[in-house]
Length: 467
Ligand code: SF4
Image 1: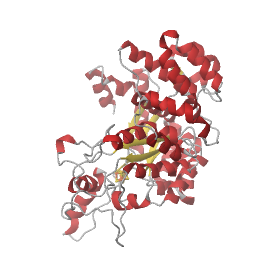
Image 2 (image 1 turned 45 degrees about the horizontal axis):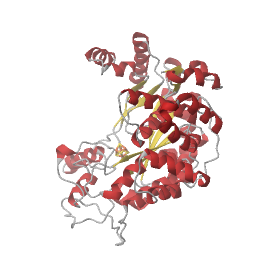
Image 3 (image 1 turned 30 degrees about the horizontal axis):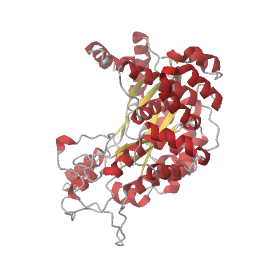
Image 4 (image 1 turned 45 degrees about the vertical axis):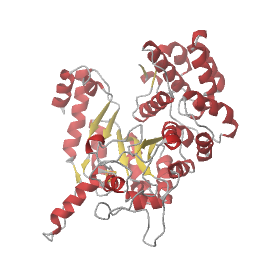
């Protein structure tokens, strides 16, 4: 670990960021026993099964916990590196595909980690691991004494049939809701994950069963295709909107891009939804659909969905609001979104649970309006008026005033570079704002420190950095 950070620090200015980052990575376990069709892990499991099929022996488990002492020593190395590079690491991201497989292991790790390292983990877990009585016990164990600062949980689709038939994920919606409920009971920031633009259309050609066995027709012959793929994306948003999702929680999403060799990637090609062009597709979730079957207004809506769904997830009626936004507009520029927020605010039904997170809690509209007066002089009238229209956007999200300041900061940075600030930029700043909170890296932008600092009442304020 030390060598990695030393090498990357010395290699270039660009790679210095790894050592200087306040979030570091650790692996608590290797492998995963699930076989989600969009993930490269499923191909590893298939390969293993195939390799062992003729030997008559069960393939070995591909999940391995790492040695406890090794993980703790890596934590101590991170602390030592902090001294060398003059940073304070605030969270370690557990890069295990899924954490919490082995609770005995976590139980043994806990006290030693808290004694010797004390940096909170950020973990990824499956809904089934977080749901029910067992899930509650798991979450209570890891949330105690701040061992875990945040949890990321993939849902992918809100339609159980799509999850099962297309993604090979078998939890039902109640399990997902129960998992969210348990996480929120322990007051840990949650990041739900969904995929937008899955290949849910009826295939334009007959799928060759040699190329792919996936199908959206179940064993009773019932079909689950969508004519409008947006309707499928809305199912996950609706599910999360009905949960007790809080202000501190983030609705992460990405547009689907097929990875060749995965069952879903092969299906997308066999169904005529994607080119069989391995060079064109890396395993990545992109800002544009990786499928060729979406175009025109559908593609525009998918991108707008991706850029605004975290905002809508924070309302009980977020799905209906998203429908109004996507089907009531043909263009989805920042000004269109701001116009929507201003004119439809009376219909917004926010979740009422107060949050304990954020640097400047309990803001009101006047505080935002005063900030816009401070941040935007007459020369910036246009962007100021967009921000005024966005007041209910800031009110709905975590630490809205600090978010408004980060947006203003980025706006001025772009202005110097003669770049326009777009809806995609709003989405990016908003996403990083949520990451900052879940990795204990919340900060106020230096440019607005004089205005914002007197408003901080949070007990964590003295530790807050500006940046
Ligand atoms: S997506 Fe996650 S849970 Fe599914 S197979 Fe891949 S690593 Fe495992």
